[in-house]
Length: 265
Ligand code: ADP
Image (cartoon, rainbow, N blue to C red; front, side, top):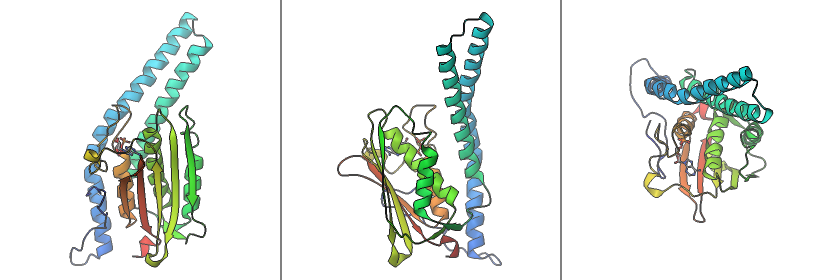
């Protein structure tokens, strides 16, 4: 997969002629093969990433058992350890979910959907994740009367989750504002959404690299470097494009433009 840059557009596979195979089948096949090829590397990295939270869970459980045996487990300590276990278990769940989405062979299931509903549902889903001591305000500016779309809602929601989580991370610990916008581009039969934050932005030197698989600037154990590459893969499967630009006033905006009916193109 070619990583998009500020200027790059992710397009479906170019024309290739193999007798008896139509172009759509071929591009689905190529996409699947490419994903499977990446899967080996992904699995190795995922095993490494899982090791850390799993070790934390085991050691916290041992701590609880030891303290229970000694009869010295006070309520505050138990709460703290359970919090550590819960947080690490969530991390494992997210990693496994990421991997299974990436390896899903069936490709997107294009069904009728409404972009604003996908956005609102995703924000509801993230309420738990965003229940954080960091003060992050979520602002929506959603265009009314968007045309209906034929998308894989779960996958587009995954793109939003990845962008929103990154924005939240960029605003940690200072806090700030995340704005989600949606709008229609009627002449092109496309709709678009963007996720902006007023955090530190992406240093220009790495702007062209952030969509690469495993590229992360987050501390070990916190970033997998997969969020944006998976988002870009999903957008490409929907025959759309994802772009990134630092905002003049600070922070960054990710914009996703998608055809309303990609399955029919
Ligand atoms: P991860 O979040 O695990 O690091 P991603 O592929 O989602 O992996 O992101 C890659 C990198 O892109 C991040 O480590 C970060 O450096 C940069 N990045 C992504 N979103 C933002 C943002 N909203 N603000 C600043 N940097 C960002």
